[in-house]
Image (cartoon, rainbow, N blue to C red; front, side, top):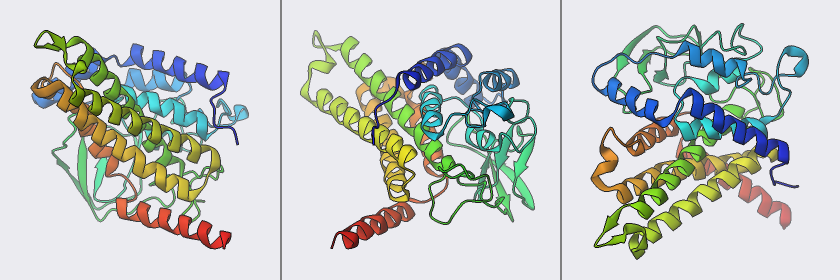
Length: 321
């Protein structure tokens, strides 16, 4: 099995990065976050959402005869990596999963969120909520650009929540127990994109910031931090890509563990490189760790992923006896 990116896949990733830079540059990210922290209500940019729909972001995996691009989960992972890198706000995963069966989702005209556990993201901004609940109250979110509501009596919408579509392409509601779900891998992709971005920020700062007349990147302690960040980012990215191609539940569990660790720990190490500056609104570093905490709380817990990975490894061992 060849896991190397094709020329078309590399072009897709490059094009998506350019799209993110136009729709949601780093300067706007910092401005929106600072405004939200100052009390400005967080709203979803409907123009940006429609632009994503026009670019095929949500209809990426729909067949061409249904107005989509006819691509697969590996390509969707590449696109969501770039969204994670840019910290693009909004219920991206649920709207993507709803494309093709919730009217307007594929085109970016309908914003879709889902009830998944106690906390639900972007409840007030969404046109369609998958699942049901008795009541909801807003709660303060650690991520200023991800509004949260605590729901009471919440009931998930079948297979939609936590993944919705399996790697094999089964539509929502047809997810097999323990199977690989697209939603989880797309969330992993967002985490790996964030991990790559914080690595880039740390290296850039380490080569330009000087202490004692030398760039701080010349000091061994900083070199070790950046090297560890690179290892985590590459391991997570490779694991997520492999799981998207293979559709193996064990590999998906490993990808989830590695992606969450890479996003959280890379953001923390990036803060170490930046020092106190990384906590200011002039920097985006702290926003990455806050978003990584939100994404880590979605779907399966660490213990559940570890159990699934252990089962997979045990099955492989027994088959080899």
